[in-house]
Length: 334
Image (cartoon, rainbow, N blue to C red; front, side, top):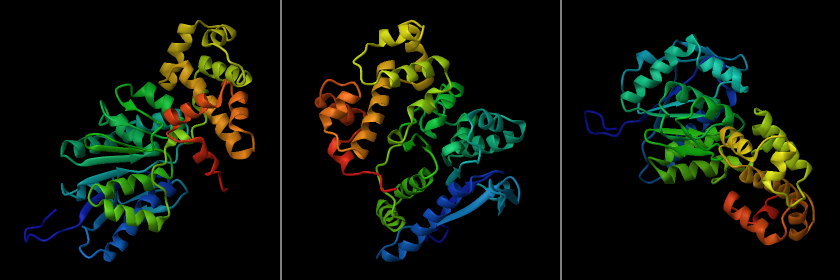
């Protein structure tokens, strides 16, 4: 923004922290913006700097690892904030997280988020912090993402949010959300890119983080299925018969439900059909085999229930946006 003299001033960012803020996520946000500010000097015509302040309802919060974080009371900042980010809190279980964000103690936090959104402040959150935005209602009708293992619980509690937990980043009208842990860096870089893509790209190189990662590459199907007994039973049955070319009706009968009931269960829990879930389970197993064994593509396809390698190749392109050759050349290095 410009001040009264017409000069360029800092971009004002408030990192809104609460007790039990996740140390890594909070630090990742600060480091990313700090790196962007540091590399501005490498540009002949540098973009605006970022003024990042940690704010809370008081003067300090206690981090998830017990560190004292000094903060500026949010009410002391006035209305100059352009961007407010809520980092993760150190609560990984969905039930405990929902209990936290819906508690009376969190009501003041939610009210501040609503008020900021009404003033036109861009709101952003990552990982478990996205539950604060959803509970406040500011994500209703908007596309959003969250930590992949929290997707089913998020979807049940906030049905008006257009959730896609397979994405690392999701931008809506006036709101941006990101997925788990390392996604805090992706979130910060995406926000920097809205003002200067070149600066975001330069900071990304210094931080040695890659672009284009998607959470769906890291999802463990049995983890997201475990909250629903029908879906969990279906997942176990599929794994036991993964090499077979079975029909969904066979699986439903084997676990004691109708095919329609199975359809309802997977859609409610995972926002996908039983067939899509089977593909995800098979692709997860195929990816593991491709990265850890010298098996041919045809052999891998057979081991996960596909009649030919062409089917496997097509599914990787459609559902993962990648090719088998890319998977084989990007084996985990740790």
